[in-house]
Image (cartoon, rainbow, N blue to C red; front, side):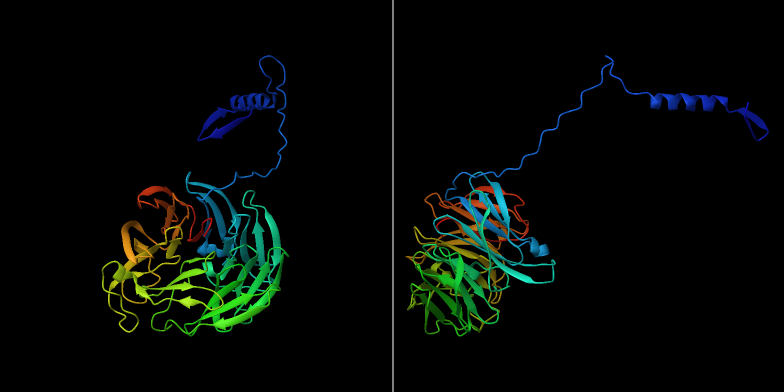
Length: 408
């Protein structure tokens, strides 16, 4: 019998070896059900891919763009139901993308940019059209180029009848690509030297803001041949510039250009755009008008944010984010939401916000909803009539920057 000598003692090894042998035998024994029959192999169901079709959307189904600034090549557009608070779907919107919707709700467009090797290689600027019910691409074409700047609502726009999509570009100079939805192609590139962005009017026209404080107005004939006019300068850019995200209504060609100090320029766009005399948001609230850059340290209530204002066209109400601060705080988030009547130029209400917001949007229906966001990426929904909270959609995204509501 094998043995082990240890510290002068002899220990037999037979018992441990016997136990090991028994364990090995047990391991090698097949597992047999008590009945003696083998269990049947499970039949796996074949996985089938399909496409879910959303029901037709109402006035509270909106698009929300998430710039995802920490990894902006992963930008996206969310399809959100404000009534249920549910995220219904999303599409890719890569690297400083822009989104705009057909006014009739037949499609929505995303202009985006990608490189063949991720962060290098051949660059592709694309215009993609999506079916709003299946979120499938119905069109995917290359653009000559597009402006790679932080997403702004006025980087891209759709004409009031959905015929044209306008895409702003800066390569090699300031211009606007005109996409014909019927022909499914870019039919014209219009140079707008010294001017930027796109504010559409009617079925075949748009305006751009120019560096001297004027507007360039572009009318397109039946062949998309442009004719260009300019207004006189109506603001002084280095004294009191206007916000690029000033709200507009494409159907009427109406824009309310809002300046950094809080002046509102009621503008009707067209071949000869008409710009009204400015009036003060602060004065409409019974306060002293705010100073411009000539008195930059005066602290008062001022507009600020990214998508800082929205207009509900049916009753001409302006919703604008406001904060207290000196001049040049135009990027500060709003701590209050002010609602003003654009016809009477009077303040309707001031809503204190639970969290500062960089974005406000509004739906256009009779039971309208107001949309706000915060640093956490929540989307807060308010009742458009009372301003009372309706719901909060938690953690919708990382950098919610603007909304697109039906009928805007």
